Amino acid sequence: MKFFVDTADIGEIREMNEAGLIDGVTTNPSLILKANRPMRDVIAEICESVDGPVSAEVTALTAEEMIREGKLLAGIASNVCIKLPLTLDGLKACKHLTDEGFETNVTLCFSATQALLAAKAGATYVSPFIGRLDDININGMELIADIRRIFDNYDFETQILAASIRTLNHVREAALIGADVATVPTSTLRALVKHPLTDKGLENFMSDWKKSGQTIA
Image 1 (cartoon, rainbow, N blue to C red):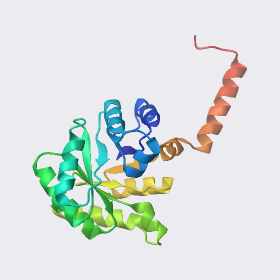
Image 2 (image 1 turned 30 degrees about the vertical axis):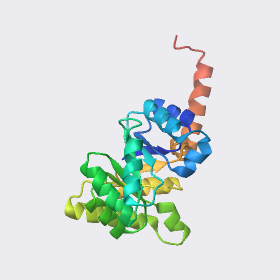
Image 3 (image 1 turned 60 degrees about the vertical axis):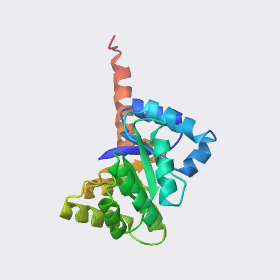
Image 4 (image 1 turned 90 degrees about the vertical axis):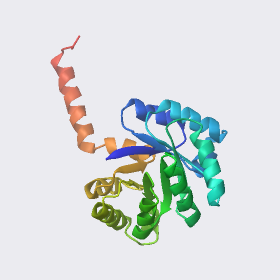
């Protein structure tokens, strides 16, 4: 499973990329707001920092304007993936942009049938939101499983990008089900590294090494 980091913080992105932990980046208008810088500058800097796709989201509501904005965003860098909302206009824009060779990420997906439509529109990625479903007492992981089965039934090439991940268990379950990508905040990536037994084992090793009186040099 690929990992995309869900942030517009260039420092965090560079750190995770240097560790070899990420395959791409996702952004949205809320993350751009937190960055407190011009959107084009933020996207350009992110694209220079990673080799993988960088999702940049349109803000228009009509297909015509989404297409126009999407092309402007794609002009920032060759690895921009145009992010579109899962609305009828968003699907129209997705079909048009995909037919012209652009990568697309259809976001705000909350049902398997929505994901099916995104795949039929040719989306490169579809982003089902796990955590937001959990918030209203619907099992978000069941949605990932349903989409995986549907896509496998018909050999759709659209990749499942598990989004709105809130817990480490979400990551584990998404991987077990077969999500192609998980997009996570940097705090989740850091937490995935941690385990109390790893820390305890390292502490013991360092203590024993110190007692040995040796050096590697």
